[in-house]
Amino acid sequence: MLALLTLTSACASSGSLSTLNFAATDASTAMLRPGDKVQITVWRQPDYSGEFAVAADSTISHPLYQDVKVAGVPVAVAEQRIRTFLARYETNPQVVVEPLFSVAVGGEVRKPDLYQLPPQTTLSQAIAQAGGPTETGQLNKVKLARGGQEVTVNLSAANAEWANVPVRSGDVIIVGKKHDILREYIGPFASMVAAAASVVYAIRR
Image (cartoon, rainbow, N blue to C red; front, side):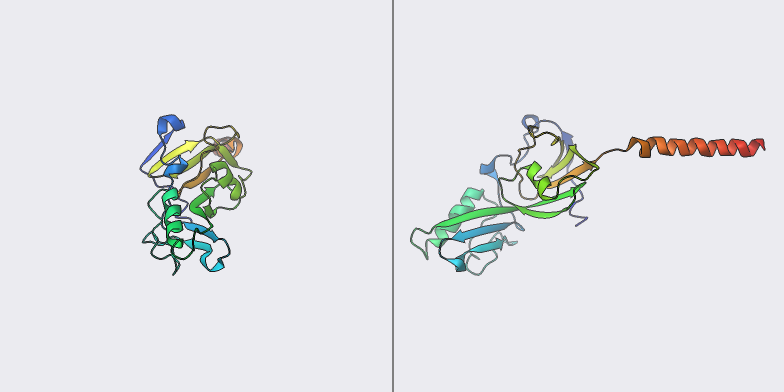
């Protein structure tokens, strides 16, 4: 998990959504990836229903759905593939498909972990899912890694530009830590002054 929550990206940047053109902010372009899950609910068909993982070959990890590829295509296409498959067994199947993206949330949050979140979940909601920021958490400096990019975003206000951006599969969200000026700067400086005073005192003796 520590390795999972370590940010490694091709570039680091900060700015607005418009200037960054950040990948996959539009729900229509969101895609499932291996490691995600999909919740399938078929009316009056419990054998066809459940929460299933997306396998490494992009199919659904279940004997019934093992030939249905859902990763690497827009979510709407994946949903249609599932409905088309079920139509072999049901006339006009009543089915609800909910993708669940794997999103890592770490840093200064109360419950850092890998979460399975629906596509409509926002960045702010993902942090809330992880228990919210700790006392030392800094929501105006949250690092988001996505698609080989890394950006520092401000989520400190509900109307912040990035607050309502939806999560995407593979996102890594790291809440920054507030700096304790007294502990980080004044404390060490005071210790240095005290040490220097001790040396001077010892020399003069």
